[in-house]
Image (cartoon, rainbow, N blue to C red; front, side):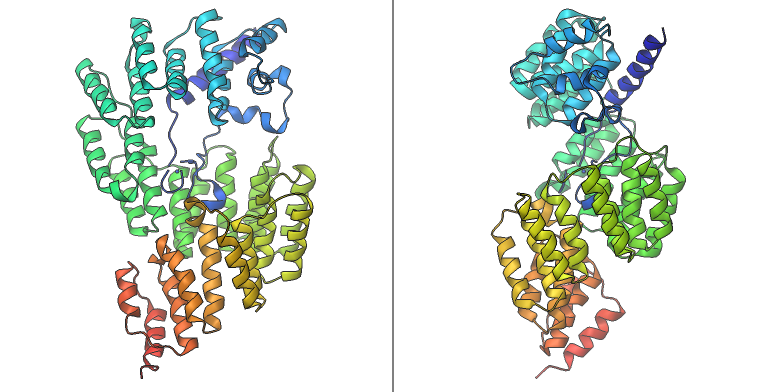
Length: 535
């Protein structure tokens, strides 16, 4: 009896999660991604909602497969059908409840195992361990389109029992069309939905906004919002989060605040995610007083022990120099059944930011012992800590350990090493590492991530101290391409190169204004010094 009650509760919880499944704008501009991945917050976002799949950590083996249907499916050898896992599950005396299926689907979707997800839904519809409902058919439609294309999805739609050809199924079909890039067909189905009196989900508009978030299509977002208003769609907080993230990715603080004000004007209540975006955007812009105020709002609005929000708080506490609060957040994370490697890395970097290098090293070693060394990113985290302080000997030690464990350095590795060399006044070696990094493929999302940009800016400052205008300008160009030059402190770093190099350029002020940056007192002082070198 107790098992059936628990299963019913899980089914209801997972049903709600599935209905509210939101899209993420991945790096520029899709928030893997409103997934914010904390280490590159302004490029990616992980919703603080604690999904059911948190309870079954298959990838790390923290849960026995016989206690979790999803794990049984995930760990199936190649060539073995999902049906065999379900038969084994039932053979052990476990009924197949909707809650177990929803949980498995959420995890399989997250892991990108669409084929397994489709197998599962086909089995459920065929074998009917319980009466399939609208959600089951929606899942079946979703994964059919992902694997076999929109035409097969349309055929399936017509074969779904009439009672389930409803609002949810239509919305899923529209989303599937948008995911496949068939926009006209999606709009046609939206028109049909209006004729049938079905409401269009905010998730559809979120998809449209994300699709139009590339630089050449940004103006179309206004049309998406107008269409949303015309359809009388209920405003949803996730839509405003996407708009805020798009502006944050462009380093446009005014745009972030404008989107936030629009949300409040629409009567949508901000939540912890809203304040995470605001706090991080201001922290990256080095507006620490405002960032601190929004961090306090996160603390007030946080619901439960959400690991992703706590990850963001660790980043913020590190930037704000709040070591006590950082320790408190980490102690909460340590209480979780499963602590991710990412959280260890964020803690490592945050403790280094507050000046506690010993604690940072302790965090990294604990991660090494508990989680093991599995990827280059883990070494890059400790490298970033040492290289920011110019601890070149320790950096070399980490690099050697990484190579000794069979991990290949990537462009981020070389960027950190370049900074470490520059901080240690080894400018030739710094340039060599920059060149080596340029020979490694680097995605746009990495180049526009906050850690990459901040590391690059630190190198600009190092070359500026040497009066090396040429190399400062080369690195500045990277910052400009990512629109990181909207901050006055970025231009100020470049101006210092001209001051130290005693080089005059009459266009510096013009470049700054046209670049979208507002000169501050330091900017004017530096420009006045540059004027002295006018011949």
